Amino acid sequence: MQQNELELYFQPQVDLNTLQITGAECLLRWNHPLDGVLFPGPLIEAAESYNMMNELAYWTFEQAFQNMVKLDSQGLNVSLSVNISPTQLYDSKLIPALVRLRDKYALDLSRFELELTEDVALSNSLMVKKQLHELGALGIGIAVDDFGKGYSNLAFIRELNIDALKIDKSFVMELGDNPVNRAIIEAAKIIGKAKNC
Image (tube, one colour):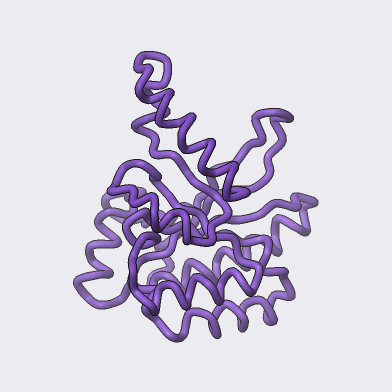
């Protein structure tokens, strides 16, 4: 962070009916001076071992807001998705930090989506439920990432207020070869439609 070696990359989200870019997922990369661009694995491991996950997450949020202002100035009115770690959902500073960024950059929080892994989304923790409820009340979208990869507890999915289900790529990559993958995706689609995802 101090050496300014972290960067956000943007993976476009495309409406397959119109082929228009509707948003982008923020992907954290470490532009290492010796090893080149590193995927987040080593960075996340280091951040976890040094108890810096929150610091890393707040840096990412700030960058996402700054970049949305830049995208707006270029006429690209899109939403941005940011991955959120389990640590964040137990941090009482999360909501105030997002409100501060909203006010600082004068951006509507409904243009942002937080992606959480299935196991975190399905946590029975009261703190997680409270945070997710408050995030939703602020207009922030909640997406369950890698859906189907973990243990899909349908009872929790039924109760959870979410805006998107992101089906794990292992099902999509073999979609043409495996009829069970197609069935799983169809089932997720039905669940998502019932939940207005």
